[in-house]
Image (tube, rainbow, N blue to C red; front, side, top):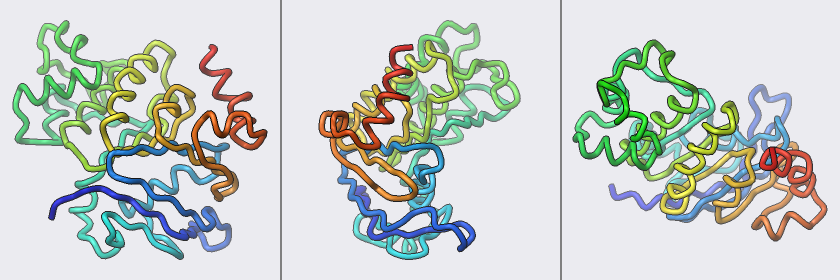
Length: 249
């Protein structure tokens, strides 16, 4: 079936143990070709929301729909094929860069891989290696830096060519130089792909079409950076204590 990639989160409630509600009446739409950033204090439910889309968990109440169809009615393999996730924890297999890229798309050509690596801002590093794409990465990528591993994981997701891209704190564990290189890769991707971003850097958030602000499992504010930064609410506090400090560091 053709995929447009409209995501609809409607009146969603969720709890892990039925004792403490994690998400409370979450509502938002993500239109194909657009992007949303989700921000909020630690533990506010940001990652939980994105875990519901590929059905790592199912909602307690409400619905998550993909192109108008409840995800619980979609074939699980098909659904997850449409979603690509770049997370804080990057996993690379003990093989070459080529092996790791082809895992996402076994039929990818050399040109496909080079193009994905260029978009992920990692091609110059690969081209400088004696073995190029056949450079061995070691178990879990131990021969590479955190930033190099993360950019290879972005290239791998781009090769998969999913309908929806999710960046879950993709830069939060990196040094500022590595983070900058990844940010240079993410920004144009977000401008051209349907995306959800959970981020702690202001520059990442500004790339999104809309910002959702979570607190205690509820969306308490939504809008653009300009709408929210001077409103005196949760976003203003996050900006003054977290985003602004990090970006000025």
